[in-house]
Length: 70
Image (tube, rainbow, N blue to C red):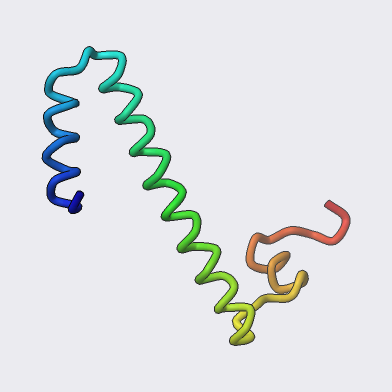
């Protein structure tokens, strides 16, 4: 089954489903999108580390104005 056929079938299923099912599918799609965003952030972070784009603990303290005794 092609991606286009799957999308068409999903549209039919959703159009003929009750509210509970539609809301569950919606939540599932939101969770999937969120996971994709998190995965992208992790990959970008790993690339930053590999490229040396990091900050020391003291730099972070200064950035957020955190005193050593806090």
